[in-house]
Length: 131
Length: 175
Image 1 (cartoon, one colour):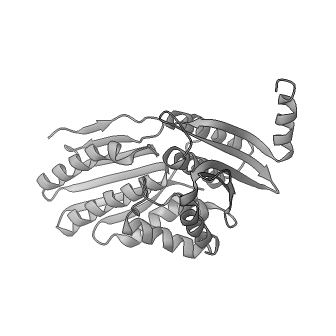
Image 2: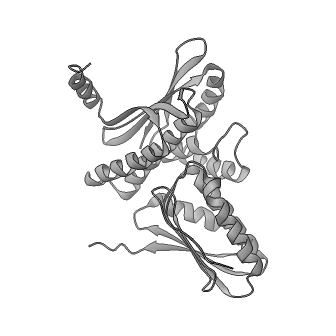
Image 3: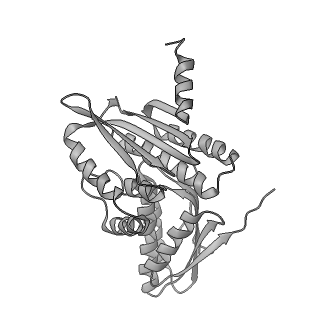
C-alpha cells in the first residue's frame, strides 16, 4: 500500500502516514468546517493499514497545537481504532505531544490516556525551540 | 454614518472591545481572524493557554454561527463576533438570529451548563463525546460545553425577541 501524505492547511493538520517505517504523524491545527470530509480518507487508510500490519512496532505521533470540539470527537474515534487494534495484538505506541504551557492539550492527552486500555500512550512534552 | 464611525469605534473601545466583526462568517475568515488574534494576544504576553482558549472560543462561536445562524445570505451565515478585555480577562461575544422555536431548547442547554463547575463540565464533555452528537447537531454537539469548560466563569447568554419568527441570541464567554 502507499503512504498517506496530506499537506497542512490553515485549519487541517499535516498527515504523514509512513507504512514502510510504521510511523504515523498527525501534526498541526484541526478545525475544518466539516471534519468527516477531511478525516474519512485518514480513517480508510488507517483501517487498511492495520488490517495488513503484523507484529512490527507502530508509532503514532499526535502533535496537535489546536483542535476544535468536533475534531476532538474524531481524534477520540481515531485513538479508539488504534486501541482496538492493539487489543487485537498489534504493537502500537501513541505519543501525545503537547507544548509546555498548554494546559488544555495536556488535559486532553491525560483523558485519552485514561480511556485507552491497550495502546502504549505517552504524554510527551515538546521542547520549545526558541530562536 | 461616515462621521459617526469614530464614535462607533470609541464606543467599542469604551466597552473593552478590540475586535469586532458583523456580517457573513466563513471558514476562511475564521482562520484569518484566529491567527490575527493569536498574534495580538501573544504580544500582550498572555500565557499560551490563554491565547489558545481565546482562539478556540472564537472558532467555536464562529462555527456555531456558520452552522446554526438563522439569518442567511445565500449560503453564508450572518452573525456578530467581538473580542475584548476587561478586569484582566479576555472575553468573547457572539450573536446571531435564531428561530423562536429553538429558543427554549438552547436556553435549557445553556442554563444547565451555567450551573456546572469545572469538573462537572469536564465529565459532561467526556460523556457527550463518548455518546456522540444529539440529533439536532451539525458537529459533535460539544461546542457549548467546550466553551463553558474553557471559561473562567459561567457563560452568560440572552435572547431578545425580534418579531414573531426570530430572536437574537447573544452569548458572552469570559476566558
